[in-house]
Image (cartoon, rainbow, N blue to C red):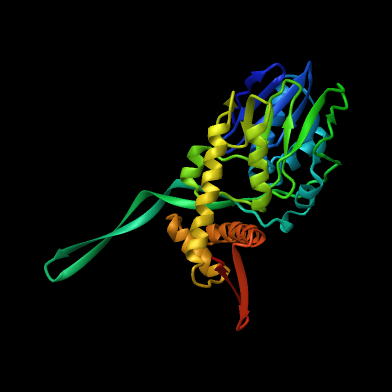
Amino acid sequence: MTLNLEHLRGGTYYFPLKYTNIGMYMFKKQCILIDTGSSEEEGMAIVEYMKSKGLTLDSILITHAHADNLAGAHFIKNKTKAKLYASKEDSVVIENPKKSNFATIISELKEVEITESDVNKEGEDKIIHFIPTKKKVMQHSVLKHEKCLVDGHLVPGKDFVMPSTKHKLDIIGLQGHSSGQVGIVTPDKVFFIGDSLYSTDELSENPIPYSSDVTKTKKTLEYLLQTKYTLFVPTHGKPLEFSITSEVYNNQRQIKMLEETILMHLSMPKTTDELVALVLASFETEENIPNFFMISSTISAYLEDLKKANKIKAIHEKGKTRWFADF
């Protein structure tokens, strides 16, 4: 695997990998990583790259505990002996992957071999020919990460100090996508924002973005509207310069659209599962098992937020909980 290290500003760089962006801040030959890639293979490539450049890995900082930006951590940590840091909340999932209610689902067109039949009629007899061929089909796979020991916690509002150089990185709370997601600002004022913001392309492909806590997601978006920084690196997509106002507005509009869709469907009482099926249909999202699992968690977060806002109520009857809009 060939990696390209792209320069951002000063000593701040990033690897644009297949699914995610991985940050690197370096001073002389000392460096830190911000997230670790979506597979052990990517982790291996990162270690090889650092080795080829004579870099020493000081620390690994994790923005949030999801496999697409975390799966390389176990390999990198073992090979380099660098210490790993994450928020207290997300450390629980990093050390105990089975406690996560999030699944990173990758959908790709893959070429598979199939056998097609062709029937010829010769006289009174039918002769069936089996013809091997190749066809591209959409396949879904779930990324996973191995458990990894967390050596220390990233605390919002408290600087992280690189042990080798004493350079400081700002840690900013960006909860919502995960319970303890943090943003990391390098000394060059480059802001790695994790999955706190979905690009326009992402929202087009995934109109129901994952949220573990919608109330906190809204607060994070409000923070990003007011931020003083001007160079942002999301987990997915290209870095954003100068202003992210339009991207934040797009995310806020998507949240509003989801809320309105949920309230519309709750004009009559629905169970969570019934509501999830209706929301999937409304946004023309494929109803497969991974999607249903992910969207169920997100819809539950929306229901909690709408309940706090006194926009919906719950009734319990015949062993089921049903939600309805309180107009």
